[in-house]
Length: 275
Image 1 (cartoon, rainbow, N blue to C red):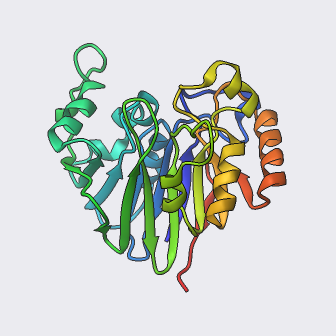
Image 2: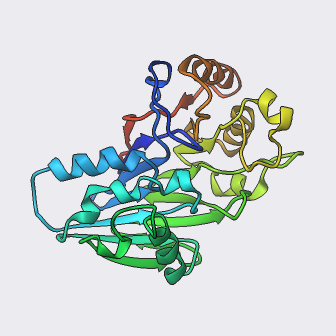
């Protein structure tokens, strides 16, 4: 399978020269299975460029997309009205979330309701299905998917994707405990090849008034990565107030604690080949 980041900023998008290296779009990522199944994680503004790319691709006109939502905070769904495939009658999108199917539909429709948008969500031409993520593991094409509740206001889930002995965990919005490690997440991420973790705040900013906001730090990410024996740690949900030079520095500090650390950035793509 192959994964790619399309947006890695949290809270809101940004656009400036000093944030261009890691990108300014909010969270969205893709996973493509060995069978060619397309799975999208979250629909922040990063999904807009993804949609444009998909629209340019040659090949069969009919397309089925699986879109998994970690939660419904605006930075994770705000790109959805501008996702071009949703306006294509030959596209089917199946939405998965921790909520009941009708609740998911209502929440997504809400961002285009009333005076917020000139079209209604229901008017988009694509065929849309809504599913609550089942308990335990489930399959999407050739991928095995599991999920874990995280510590975040109004709730959020981490997703794990497994195929042919390789694995990825997305844990983009979570707050670490004040003492020790998140035992559930530690177990969930044990031995995964790639671990995407919430690094919204520096440790200093976290202690200076950001406790309880539902986010974590690079330092806590390295602790989890080390104890879980992961392959590579990706620091994500990057603070929109941090320019590239700050991200460079926090990634450097993180590598001192866990050498196989990278800051996530738009366009970063990685193929995982089964053993």
